[in-house]
Length: 535
Image 1 (tube, rainbow, N blue to C red):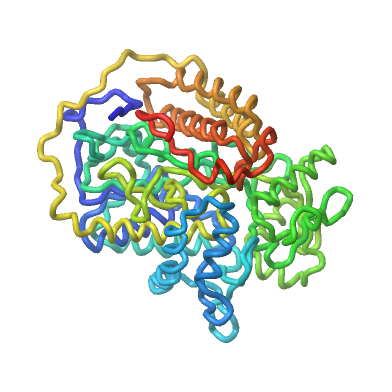
Image 2 (image 1 turned 180 degrees about the horizontal axis):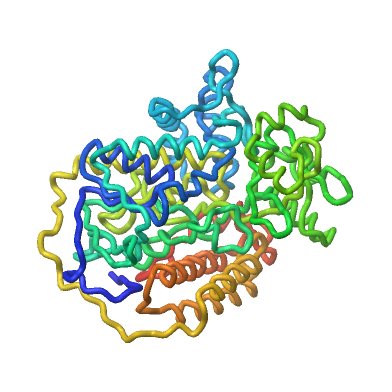
């Protein structure tokens, strides 16, 4: 088994702490897993920055689950998920998601999550793109992720068996005797520390920050994919990156997500001629799957030469719009726009990774001792294109299954008493370019060549430049910024490599040189492993 480390270290010279579970990440998947794990053992919860610096906190639209038993069913939710996944969803994983999901959401409610309700006191449900029924629970209109983050954070802070460590950046996994034993991390004082556990759970989120245009916060740099891959764990479906169709496009401002729920409530998409164009691209028009809507917008932009199209809510009741989407309304207002009465400029932006660390339905990776859940994991539940609002549900369901699968092994797995003579010493390497310059260059490469539209020539050019950057960052590295940049290059290489291998177009992966879906040859997955190449 090949393991590659980014930093110099001598294991027996580092401060060492132990727990039953080492959980990395503080979004919905990490927090929920830590809470469930604490029912059975000691947990050390490591998070890269603050507890609330997550993609979960930014989630607007909601969480999908069947709560209306008369109009909806798990079978319908499954059918919608499979349709969006474009033939590549793992059927067993989808069945687990839609059948176990409602009970997990009820646990959130029991913890205090305050989802919006109707005047009659029932959970208020809305509809989003590619859903055939209204099954999206939301909180404070468009602040669902914020409410879930608040609820789980409060629960974590109450739990005495959870040792929370903020501002701890995990650099690499520690592996010996062909098992993941723990993690190396920079602490809040930028000193390396060793955390050993019976089970290590990665819930580190996605990698939207690999792209120039993204809805993701600064922490989403693809670290989990890179550290697992370097440790020998397989990754899967890395070519499938979801680009959200509607991010607010205002010059000089960061991209801000305009939730899928806005179109679910009836908003139209219009081009620069004022035409409602989605009716020409898909029978569901604005409610088509995200990949369809995003590429339709790109086609309209290529025709017009502009950099945005418009969301139009002017035909809806203004008070209803502002009440339903208070957070989006307030953000638009900061830029002189009224969500209810103005045309809102939008464009696609990188949003979500369908691929990730390969797991089974219990979160186990191909590396013993290592588990993964949430966006950093790939159990195959999203296939080639995630159904809107299934992501938060994914983190709950499969995070919970990790604990159910491992709690019975806590007595049989023994923490190592004596550390092996694990030491890495390499000659110092001086970086030839400033790190911010390398990050900006990578984001541009990924946006231009590994984005919404891909070609063999563009992917090969991207891979050459990515590999050159990886050589500059081959280590040993000093400090979290250098390690984070290296992780970005490692993960970018995985996305580009998988995209080059898949010679068809499907879901979030579009090859203009192979524009058609090829079910005869490509109803299979691209699996990459550091010491074993492609499967």
